[in-house]
Image (tube, rainbow, N blue to C red):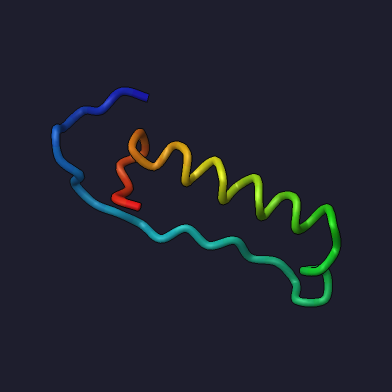
Length: 50
């Protein structure tokens, strides 16, 4: 990714949606942890202030 402007021009929330009944299954939890970690680790690159 390459930043096109020095400041953040907008933002969007990110939602992980899954069925409640499968939320405790290991593969689902693993995906949630992975996606959360990638977003957190790349927050500066994707323009989040998180």
